[in-house]
Amino acid sequence: MTGIGVDANVHSWHNGALKPAIDRYVHLGPMTWRVIIEKADWEPSQYGSPDVIDEAYYNRIYSAGKMEDLWDTIDYIESFPGQAVSLSIMGGVADWMGGNHIETDKEEYWVRMLASLLDYGSRERHARVELVSPFNEPDWNGIEGPKVDPVQMTRLLDKLGKRLDDLGLGDVRFVVPDTANAEAARSQYMPALLANPSVVAKIARIGIHSYSGDSAGVPQSVHVGPLANAGVWATEFNAWCDACDSGAPPPGAWDQASAMAHDLLAMIDQGVTGAQLYDAWDGYYEHHSSVGYWGALAYDAGSGAYTPRRSFDVLALAVKNIPPGAVRLSTSGAASVDADAFLVPSSGEITVVGINRSSSVQRFRVAVQGTPSKAPTTLSVVDPAVAGVGLSTVSAQGDPFVVSVPAGAMFALGLP
Image 1 (tube, one colour):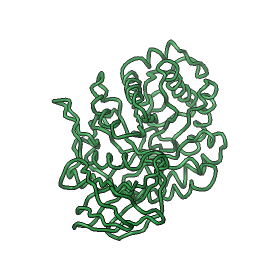
Image 2 (cartoon, helix red, strand yellow):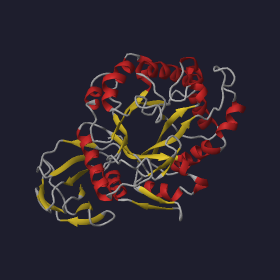
Image 3 (cartoon, one colour):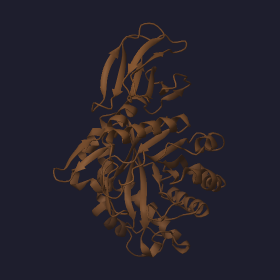
Image 4 (cartoon, one colour):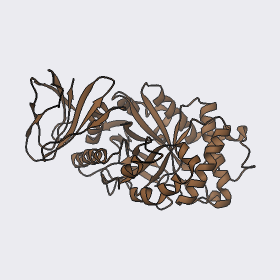
């Protein structure tokens, strides 16, 4: 596993009013943050030669407005140990560049725009951004991000990678293709990207979006070949919410959280090695022209307070028990309990994370082959009826031992 985390919209920064929300997350442990800047329209008009980065021109753009919010958000996140930032460019480009697509004759300007952003962040703000997702849902409607087909994406990434090398930013690598449809990533975008060795060398993670728990075989297709070590991230995942983009929160908080937990474990079973929950908090999105209510933290505009939804409890349990570096182990068990086991090499601990899918309390036996369990053992439970993450100690004398999990609950068991 290479990290569980969240999507983080910087429009909520508001001169630091977002800090309490970020604090809630960083206290959970090491996380991956898909920090979002949108829309990609910060160059209002075509300017100068695409071969030249005019520092004075870009310094004015990147030191004001939403761009300043971007750097302040990244700076605050990175002030905490163990937090990793991946930058996501979301929403359409400026009209002169194509709006809902990227005009072929404007590609060099797009490359300069992205390169100048990363150059400024490194040079002026000392931001540690080594992962960037230049496209967001390029296979979709041109609103979430410009429509970019596989051939154009490969061409743009080739140009951008070389431009970043020239700027001394060769350590910046890509999270792509970040398609809305995971099947499109597997069958359309990946073959094109893999055909270009220069682009392959710049890819750090294969990014997909999933709101159903289905990775469409992408991990299996990546498992062999030149990107076998990259792994697959579900850079946007959640249970689907019909009205969350248009002004209404999830109708059933626990139903949403439970489905989200099930989808996360399902994708891990399919070979996904990292996932970022969409969304960290409720907030305004330019490309939708509305407030999104996908957040694991609900925002009250009147008080400015951020309050956990039940999806936050689920994410908290996952982050604490599936840290970066955890190795998924082979498991088998009862049909009523979906569970995955992980070895944490840094501590030698084994964690079991799962969901009781039944409507009754389930008592099940836990046995670790070749490693007798030791007492005490910590059981963490996210109960449908009780907010927060409950902690208890269970007797783990002998192997196997018995654990009870409430109906419908998510749980994590730590085996020292």
